[in-house]
Image (cartoon, rainbow, N blue to C red):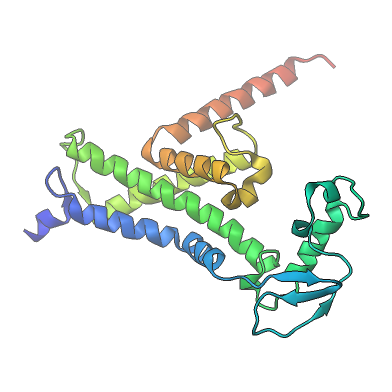
Amino acid sequence: MKRTLFKLSQTNTAPFVLISLLYSIFLLGPFIYFAFLKSSPHTSYYVSGEVAVPSNPNDSTEIEMGVAPANNFDDEDVHGGDRDVDESEGSNTVTMLNALTDDWKSNSESREFRMLTRVATFSLICGFGALGAAISLITRTRNKELVHEDFSLSEILAVQTIGAIFAMILGFAFLGNMISGTLFPNPRVFYRILYIPPAFGKLVVWSFIAGFSERLVPNILNNLTKKSDITKGDSTETPN
């Protein structure tokens, strides 16, 4: 009974679904932490005259400022209205106001929070890549496509790890602009992709597909290798 319980089969998938979800959640840990921090109240400042006052009523700090944040301006002000403040000045002021917070967890412009954002991005990629690989394996087992193969819990974790690696490679391909188009994330916003819903959705879907389709990333790598060989051959044949 114990031997059967820890072997993936058409009638025994529940333990593997649970383990797969737990492993995926483990890989998604930094992203979950990032999402928790973004959902927590952040210290922000509004401008009263030339004094920046914290929005938290318990904080009595007052900081002298000369320029109001950009979000206090309308479009006319930003694009050349009566005020002598441009968009760059407004964004610089927002950065200055964010820097007033002592806790990096409440300051999205801090070095630590930016690093967390990048780690959370790759955590998201690995987590959904691993989840895609597990769902692919379990689905094929239930559909009797893997009748002659037995997978243990450790083996399915290995499959998920491979799926996470494939998703990571695909993420780097997006970042390097090796794959481009309207269906793929824009590399220019890659490190801010968690703040852009359309790009975020594309990254999640492609990360899942990278793990779910075990031949996708190897085929992409083969195509890139062939293109590299063709380019190298053309450069060799070009006369000096």
